Image 1 (tube, rainbow, N blue to C red):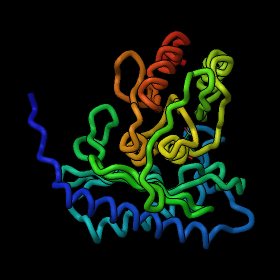
Image 2: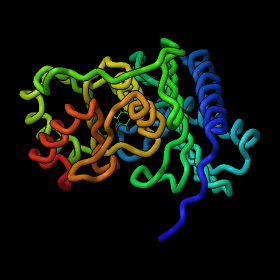
Image 3: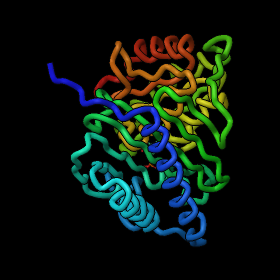
Length: 280
Ligand code: IPD
């Protein structure tokens, strides 16, 4: 059995939360101030509809510069750059713009997501310690710290429990690959008749924070990357959400399901029956 390194103290975790918040706000201010009228795609990643803009890169560079100065011993895992190894056992997990397609089109739902986790930066095994999600357009900021709750601009958050699955408003998202999307559409066809309605807002980190504040009852998505879920997942859990995968597995890129424990278990059962994690 491998021994786990000691986690930082509660007051150190509080400081990490403050730093995550400050970093997300600073990058958010840069993104807000620097958005040109016509945003251009600088490059594409997994497919031609998976874009990167100059601002994704600039935001991540800013976050990395600040972390190198403030937390030189920590590792960094970011959506748009190389992994930086560390010696402290902590890793900062960065999404410089979550919701890049919304940013590209001027749809108002995109965010900076900054989290710090202990252990390998793998959602199956990591221990999220602190995180912040800053919604760039409206300036809302959600933060959380392990064991210390979650807040939105200082207001403590609690997930809502809808009376039933049938009355639950469910957020979800889709991948960038055609085969994955075709499979997600088949699963959606089985979920949609069983719930109040579906929302596809386009930024997973914001979806998880909306769940934490009770603006969504449930959320599920297949194919999330670590940076999509690191901060928002902690916000949701600290607001009382259950966050898992299917068949007793932790939430990973195979499936992430979040919600109040009772409704989340029902959605997990529905997604299992729909074989939502079968190979695309
Ligand atoms: C994407 C968004 C989207 C989700 C995708 C993510 P990105 O992140 O969070 O809502 O459906 O799975 O990849 O590419 O904008 O950082």
